[in-house]
Image 1 (cartoon, rainbow, N blue to C red):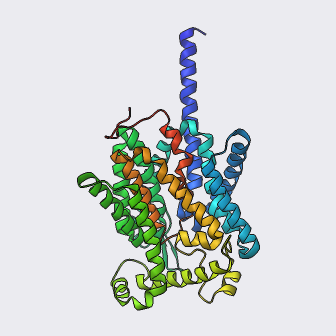
Image 2: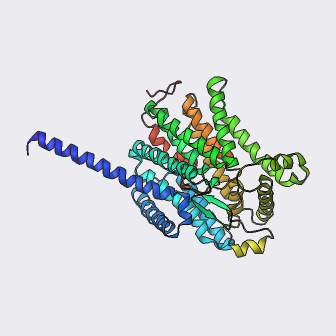
Image 3: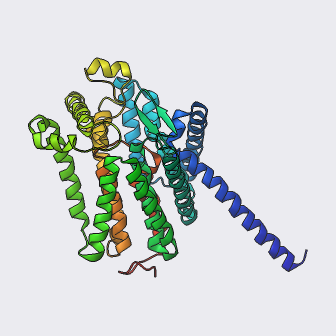
Length: 409
């Protein structure tokens, strides 16, 4: 074989290897992300769950064996999962739920960490997959306004990404990844706008109130930043803390807040009455605070239906619809403070980018997701992928420095 033929052969093999890697990486990412509709189709649900468990075992095992130094933030998330699993063993007894809330996220982050040298390509694949999933979900919403599937027991419409409350757990992580790529390479701007437009249209059609509010908040912050004044990280974190305090204040004073009840009863969106859903959340949060007072350090874990009925008179709920409260409830003060530390480290991670507009927009996207967590518990790998982005983002930053216009140097 001549030198030219040999070079062509090597080039072809490299191209083939890249294509094979992209196909495999896309399959792995899709399995970890798991579209919500899979939960309602038993055979599909089994395939995804088996794939998640198998891939998580493989990638976590490989990371522990091959990595000389395990990422600190991955370990912190692992500590939370161990605490919740321990408290579940001692009190809650709902072991599958404790595992499914964290194990796939740990597996996905381990997969990303092991392929950190290909982080640019991985993020492109995540972005492309996000466009495909959001578009497919939007098409099903348009074609099947009554739901692609329907849960009669809960009166829920199901589309590709699940029920309407699930979509926020996909929108903000995909926006975050799109902003990361756009920040370092302007050629990704069109894809960012595509994800943003599809997300807005989907939220308007499905009408999940929390997602609509948080998406509007993100757009407002971006608009204000571009045309009026930029926001500081400390202000955003302060607002987030105030938001948690305000929700807890409402929890214990809702009966006297007639004006708020009138506002909620006047909101006419698809699904259950907003006044009813808020009442349910308040009942759960009050029960959670009573339980936290008895098990303050490591909580009670994930409760089975039987244990829930023994501990409370309200109807069974698998989660508390407030991720911060759910952390306190299932993992106690220890898990709660570790979770807050992870969020703080994620904000701290992008401080070098705050002088750039797209860097600040990443912060606004993270802030919007954190606000969404005040009314939901999206224990999705996509959400932890974003909240614990300090596991993978430093690899993206290697060799890159940005000026005030956000252009790479």
